[in-house]
Length: 497
Image 1 (cartoon, rainbow, N blue to C red):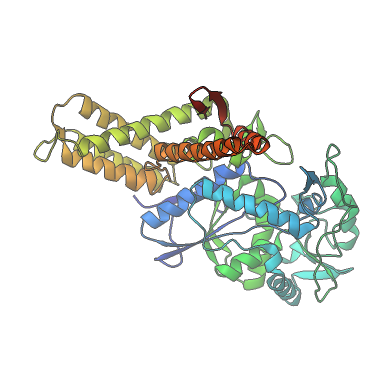
Image 2: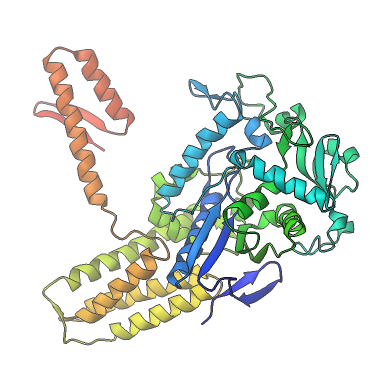
């Protein structure tokens, strides 16, 4: 079965044909680093990761670029915000840098394949200025009071992604831009000056404390005066810089279809005369309590907290249980079901691995397990080629787990070749495509943690013997702060994690 994708641009399910039959150019609209990444971000990350992995499984080379928006009024609004004993940052780059560090750590915790590059807006202002200049030269943009706007009336295909006409498009941008624009639907490519006080106040929270006056954010020189890039122009500039003028797959959240992705198409194709992206894929909403999970609504669970609570395998199982272009709702019950499914899959893997390496596995024994393996492989492949249907692909692996358990329960002598093929399938598809980690040494990690606790307790005993009771108490407090309960007994200290 040929890989087929649901293309938002055409509204059709289409056969996938990249411009280069060997390599795929993939761009994902990344995060604005004004807060910690949450489960809604993690869901799309995981699906982009699975898409990346499946394309590589099919034999393509994948050039994957994911931008980081580190220039934005939401970031400026958090300058000077009190956080613990200090602030989130003294200026816009400082705030962004802190969240970027956390973002990259969250990506690694989710076992994501690395993109080829994570370009930042702040590092690509020259390319953005050049692109804006090109649009002015070609008559698609105009300067007004030091700002530059894209004239949507000059691009006849404007609205083709979101299926709306220019007449139906509401005014874009903040209210103080309207007097500067030729048409209310025109959008900003370059904004004169810094971030306005009104914009900062709009994004600040009244229940938080700030140590700084209202900041204006970073500005850069340009032919139109000092200012900042508009939001939409950044993705076009960075995609063209690190991929090409025309790419194969552009992915992002469904909420970005308009205006962000519509504007990307207009400015990119106006500048180059080429189709910007062949396939537009959009991840549907991730909801909590029937609302979109988002930082602005405050109804979110940070990625770091979720990984600590549930584990990365359970989270990936949860996300894979719904396809990328279907709405998914967070609930404790759904997470518990994902944990149970992961434990069932992992237990089957461990059991098959043990049996294959045990004395009861025989090379001349044949069983229905072999047919079950091939059926599972075919079902998994068909599902992934059907617009990356992770739900059905996952069902194929769980069905194979059941078949493996039935074989082991009903046989005195095990089919070694069937078991070996089962392991290969779990590892090739479960680990290689869905990103699970069957080899995670949780027991080894617990052993190491115990050894480290015992080392600290030995040091504490040395301090007590040297009458350094204050230091000994500090060590005990530090352990308790990390979740290690220490109990002194007649036989020495005991602990519980």
